[in-house]
Length: 320
Image (cartoon, rainbow, N blue to C red; front, top):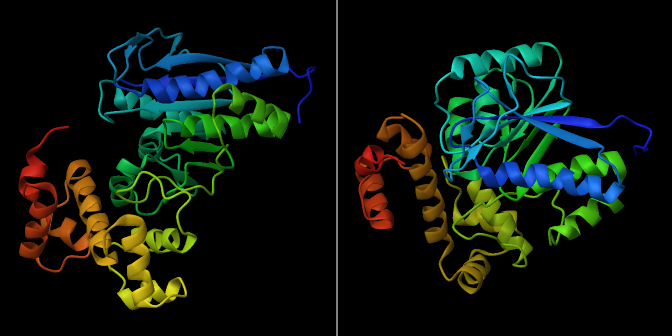
């Protein structure tokens, strides 16, 4: 735990075009509030861009920048803030700056989709990380050797990643807790009406439902097992055995809590993963089908159309 005699910590936020304003604000405001709680400015921060010019957030608001990547000052952690796109002018320069930072032993972080750029720069090799659930499927296809969890955030030595949105609060609160203890972290969380400080063991969204909190633990365990086995779907018997239930008991559990059969729910998970892969990668449609447990292209196309009202080929042509 730190004491007021220490100099403090400085964070740099490297912003790229169409970054998530919410993720950035959640991170900065958490440490701003921590300063208020401890009574002095222990945390400070600066903004950085490729060329030092203002950057437009995904909501259309421009953000003033303090430094370019070539002029950036010392920072305890350099966070990469990414939102709607991972392609932008000056990308090679940015990746080079991240590699240089990593070679010098600097700590790196990623908010929302920031993990993608860290991985492209080779800065997540051998590290555990996370990324926003919507981008996880594409990430795992592009970087299969990197352990990308479904957690709300991950801290692995000098790598700090989170899924963005409110998980930026949780990540920064964990940093505050490590610096000042649980009391200050809880005080900051209360300021934001943040009811519960999530830990790295908390999972992001894992299915069509926003949250399974408060529902049966056995239901959640089965859904998590489904989400981890989309390429080779498990049988009803295997799923039931994992929860210590009979197949009939599992069926009643899903009908009571989710109003659908386990088979239908599993199909929805697989098709949602397929849609993420179609939107995020250039994988051939047949490969997408195989990656989500379909052995027949025609059955995949039929199932996809029934779920989303359009064929997979039309999804691939759509720009988001």
